[in-house]
Each structure stands twice: as structure tokens, then as C-alpha cells.
Image (cartoon, rainbow, N blue to C red):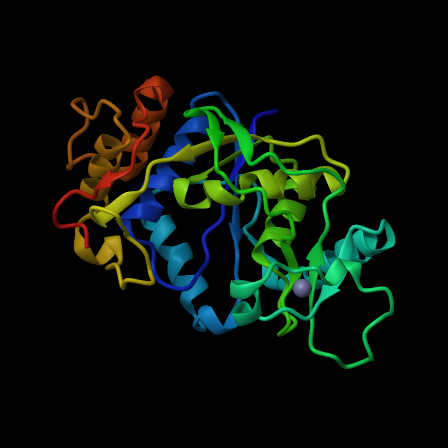
Length: 290
Ligand SMILES: [Zn+2]
């Protein structure tokens, strides 16, 4: 069965960009009778202030979205991710890396060539060493063949501060929860070929992908929590934000009215969802959303 997910990082409240991605993923699933899961990517605790996950859930709720099953919190699954790292190590597909951000600027990581184990307690990250060369190219359901130009394979699995990496948790959870298609923003396109290699190393045949355009605060600048985008629920009524997000995704919203219930807007939009109208390129967000 078609299954996708929405996987916000609770580093700030839901902004218009996240709402558009959530709406796109939800419509993609519900328009074909498929499932959509909700996953809170709260592993990077220094970036996720306490209570923000609850705020994001209540923001999502205000728009009337429904999901299949309970939300999955990545912070409760650390032993599961650790078991995946052990499996990759056992298969010879992971290695300890002592490179720093600074050293990687000057020379690429060659730590996988190290013959003897590191002395216990040496600060290191654990990285993935794919079996095969990475082409940097993948197929996107919206954009066709995408060449990311990114052939560097050594994804981090566990950071040197001990935090499980976004990439490992994302791929392991997508496999474990039966995701068939990854719908997300185009800001994550660059990492897709490497995540595909990681999925194969974990014994999965891969996902289909649909990368949605981003809502930009101004040309070239992503609307994100990092640049302090306003919570969309603070900027306007949820119905109005849904109508703007529908228009941003190229969908017909002429039938909908701000006086309608959110739930009725969502159901009406799912029955009219036309993926061929999704824009390919990121664009400026509508005025007033941040
Ligand atoms: Zn290294």
C-alpha cells in the first residue's frame, strides 16, 4: 500500500514551508487511498528546545490533518538505531572517523584505510562506507532524473558527540515503518543518492521519491526555523494558510472558501489533487506568511 510520511524536526514551530510540504505529502497519500505517518525527528536535542515537539503537534492538529498510527518519536528509538549501526559494522560497511569539520575542508576522509582499531575513548564519529560507487543520480517522481553531483559516500551514522545522525535514523525508520515513497522538500535532494545506498546496505530495495518545491523567504533563501520564520498559525487563520499552501502547490483552490472547516478543505483538495500541477521550482512564499 502507498505509504509516505511527514517528518518534522521540532527545532521551531510549523512555518509555511513545512505546512506546504505536509500538505503535499498528505494530499499525495490521501488522494490515492494511501497511508501517511507522522515522525518527530527529535534526535538532535541541542537543536530541539523542550516542549517544541508538542507545539509542532498542536500546530499540525490545528489544520485538521490526520495520520495513520501514533506519532513516532525518534528520541525513543535509540537502541534500534544502535543495532543498525552494529549490523553495518559487522558487514564491514561502517568505520570510525576522527576527521573534524575543519580537517575535511582540506582533505577528504580516508579513515576507512586505518588498519588498527582506535585507542578506547578516542573521540570519533562512525561513518558509512557504501559497497558500491555512488552515481549522484536518482529518479524523482516530480522532477525526473536528478543529478545531485554528489558522489561522496561516507554518510555519518553516529556523530562524535554520540548523537545518532539524521541520515541513519531517517533511512532506518523509513524501512521499518513500510514507507514506499519519500515526499519531502527539495532541500534534502542532495543527500538522496547516499541515503539510497544506505537503504540498500540495510537490505532494502529502495523508495520512490517526490521532492516538493521550497517556499523561499526571498530569492535563494530558504524559509526555515534557522532564519526565524514565524509560526504559520501565528501569522493567519489556518483556513487561509491552507488555501495559500494549495495555491503554492499549483492546485486549484477556487472552489474553497476561508469560511470552510479545515477538514473540509483538506478532503476537497484530496479529491481534486493533481500531481501534474505541482511546480518544479522553489518560489517565493506568499506575502504575510512569515
Ligand atoms: Zn575520517
